[in-house]
Image (cartoon, rainbow, N blue to C red):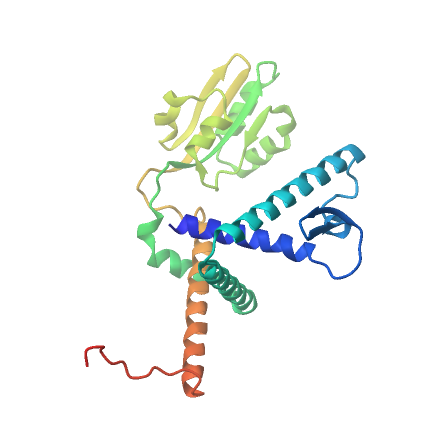
Length: 289
């Protein structure tokens, strides 16, 4: 029912747009006619991109004219066969009201909505809504390097990778050009599925290994060697870390602020109307009294 209602609205607005474009008072070159309704050259000015080829422009114009003509013919038949247009007028009027209200709300939100977040805003929302941030996927913090079988000093790279010293990591980073691929940032949470997709040598059988903290494990294929270190793990149904759900938190805070703002606007409008005697409810009486 709702779908039918909005489909009807769309057809009505689309049709009335064509009528308004076509019933021009000024004398202008017409390019098509359906009964006493004309389509003018200026109606097509914004239709064609400036860089469109001539053959394409002709096709676009023909398609537009045919579509316009079909709508005019259907509209004429509708007027002839639908004797009672009261329902149509009510739908158009309701649709117009809905558009105006939505546009006003959108303008009010754009002007007054507070979009600034503090760390405290985010932290408080996260703490108060822990139950909605349960994970439905596994996350890990990890680092890895991948080098080819032709690397001259693989043992040196393995030793640097296994080391927990900052200077060794810096040395490894400085030689990244010799690596085929790598990830040195083990402070960011990543979906386990993304890790499996990122490293071709890993497969579903390695999932249990990746879901355990490990300083180092080695995986080889025909193209080279992968060294992987898992720093931290979060499993399904555990609470997602705040950093991981930060974009979602911000969206939810904005949505809540938007609802609160609209509610406040509506409440203020009602109160002002009552105080200014622009709105009142008369005594309601039952029909049988």
